Figure (cartoon, rainbow, N blue to C red):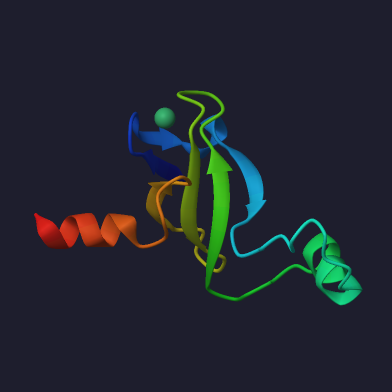
Length: 96
Ligand SMILES: [Zn+2]
């Protein structure tokens, strides 16, 4: 399985470390909404299909990437640096 790092190019998945679910949003630090905190700490999606995930190129440039992985085929697509907003790669492609 290959992941295409925007800086290093296609690399084997063994160079990368899974960093977690890319869909989670942390509640405000002062929030006392226990349901929101419980969902943030323990809630996980388990979709059959595309799933947003965070991976780090820990064996290379160490960048954190937002990746869409198909949980049925394990195909990785749309890797963009975490610092870029979601969909930034698609917008860049539309301009060129
Ligand atoms: Zn890299």
